[in-house]
Length: 615
Image (tube, rainbow, N blue to C red; front, side, top):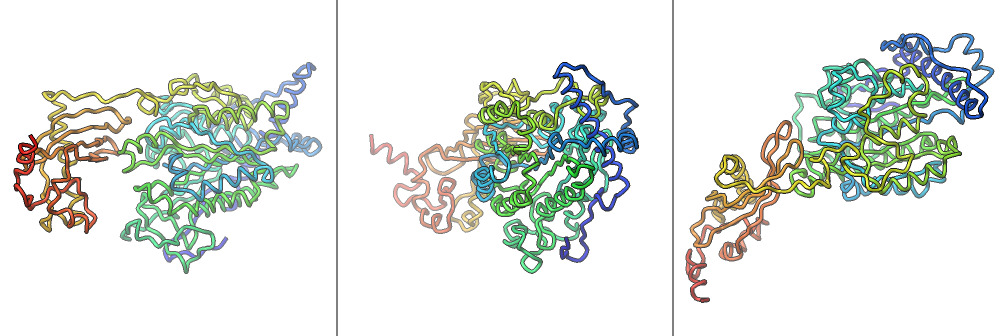
């Protein structure tokens, strides 16, 4: 398509089918050769099953990591090409397209709560699944496998826990991109993060990206990420001030929408009136169209696509609704294109919302609860007609079973035919790591699966029994908590008051910590520790002004102190009697305000005098 772009910006597709013809011819020839091998393997399996012996279809030759040699090894020879002309691959046995749409940093509760249009779109697809040729399953107990994206993307794309993959020192080949290439697929890796370079693997990517750990280039087709880079000399503006219509619907154009510089990892969300996620989906559909007629039987070359959408990686969970219509529109693009009839569609998140909400009790729970929707076409079930009822029963059952990101990986391979198909020699070398964790949801899983069963670390498990432990008042940790954490809580409270100028205008007293009464802590995640504090602030009143606070202290990329909730533990009404109306008029926090003016009756001895009179 043609899109109006502001001066100085451009969209460049790296490795595209049309811009890199020789590279993509090699990928297509490789896929054709392996699809032919798969058909021979299926024929052998059928013969074996019928008890007539086997013919042997082992793939000879040394498999190299170089893409060109892979293509050469698995290109159809003239003889094989002639053979396939007369004996075409059966379309009914063609492996399905696999599309993984990975929505970064959105919990299942947040999807229900903040992305209502998106959720309704999924429900609509579910209700009309028969007409669309697909079946929709939602795994309602899906669980993350640790903090940060890479701890979840690694098992999703390899079946290994992150530490097990790292132990291979960037030599591990069985990432999904390469696995599917060896199964006869063309691998597509798309994302809409900002990227100033054209590398596809290695040190150019930080450690949070899977590509950082690839031993070589594994994608056939990608997308050039600089299209989403905000010019560094342009000042960012707050998310709240972004024009409301930007990056929302396909109907918006350059007149309605300017490039948005939202506070979401310095990425441009809107290019010439089009949302970047809609551009990526359109690009994906165009690649599918280009590959559709690239096989003798017209069945097309199967594709494995990983689309990583960073749009919802936001600082405030309440900002998710700004993208709701856009995500609903993106899902409808797939629905209206008709690809759901022959594509296994996985709509998934890696973990829940992070940033500020993770420092609350509710947020720390939601962080461990990503969503996972699996759409399985009738075509795939028809290919497994002998097991169709069992598969559907298993999928129905497993919606209420604890699942993990490693299960996603095993399910994808199962739907594509399983390990060993295509390049059997490569699978023999790389397809049997002893540390693989997942199970395919095409088979019934135990209802009482635990975090330990699926490889989720205790600290990352929402059902863990990690409790608060009291910090002894005479310990170094207690004094460190008083020195390093309590001042941040007091600063937060004063900030809430001064947000409405209640301190500077002389209505409320600036709060100062007097003493830390008690403290307890427990691990929240690998990078966050939660503290419960009970403390007193200085005041001329006779009764202590006492508070209870829940706060978090983080390390690594979450370094710092994050204040969650602060509540007054002592009776508070009398603290603000003389300035209640002033605080109410500006919308301030009554609980934090210690009025500068003394009570009209009894003065600062109000509490002591009232206590004596009552006795």
